[in-house]
Length: 203
Image (cartoon, rainbow, N blue to C red; front, side, top):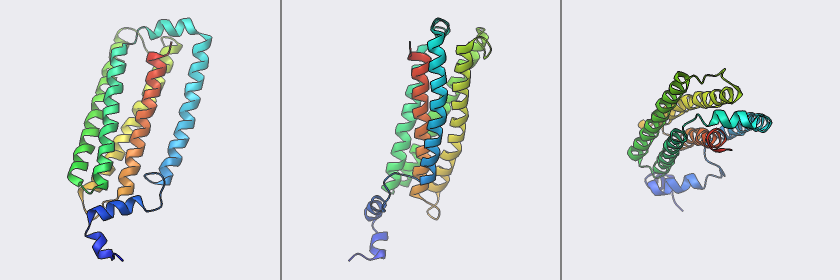
């Protein structure tokens, strides 16, 4: 029988111990409850958007044509890259490669920051071209959906900061907390993919 000391001295054993701790999903259950709540809220937003788009399809198509699809694709690829890096962060933390986990957390932040800057530039460009929140119903939805996602992404930086704080010191490292923070980041990335499909791609 393995002793606690022998397990603690074996990083791989500790990583396996995490996988066998009885949890079926990563992170804290409270976060998954929050994710479900957010999914329901955004589903209601998306449902209203689709209904209104169906009722005013010509207006929505005309206004949608003023968005730059290339910018939307770029932003989506940036966030997908950030999700990849946060997944690598979690995996590295499980393997107790904390330096690699930190590096991937920083890269996640970098790509998230690139997205924020790109989104602000896109908003500024659209407003300078005369398309503001009050231009028509499509742009009201556009600024509302991208704006509320922007706010959630800012909150995501707080969660990433918590993950970095956890990873920096052996005394406070918590795999569960790192996974909780990553779960939130994946959620807002997934929501952006849906927003991108509705605003830039749907016809």
